[in-house]
Image 1 (cartoon, rainbow, N blue to C red):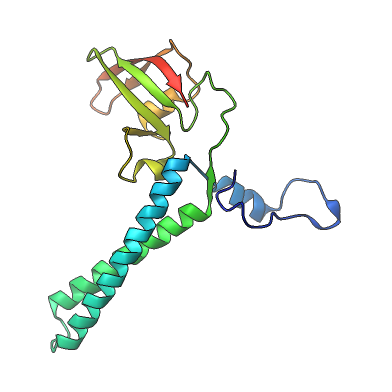
Image 2: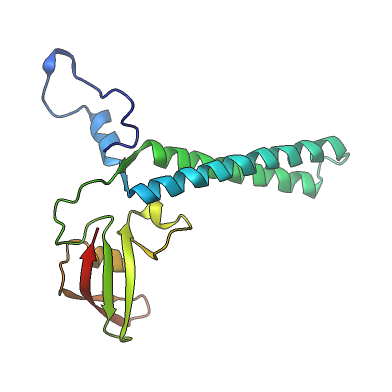
Length: 186
């Protein structure tokens, strides 16, 4: 389900059923798949950043009113903070605009985005439960489970695996970690 499904879908004039235009293909390739929980966390983070922006704007205004020096470091810090928050808001809004919420899982016996996986780390002899998510979702704090990005070394190896599959992840330091998929749930 599209996160913005309340908007009308695009229809082609004259019933053209051929592949989309280059712009449509590019937009589709930029789509971000998120779990429902991840979408909601991103929305909450956006709201928090918007509140931070209001506060940063207030502080900047105060700094501008009280500063007599054009090279005031407090003023420069306030400007920089406001710009950083605005950039984060732009990033969040872009991600949410391109988001598709994952509702259905085609291969429930295999690891896909949104899967909650129990992994046995055969190197350390410890089990860990993780959720496989897209990169934008992995960076947002909160949630009850550790998240593994599909783009991370473990995430790349996990995608498409089924219960009982074992795999090895090569670390940057030359070492290897061995894992086994113990369970998959959605």
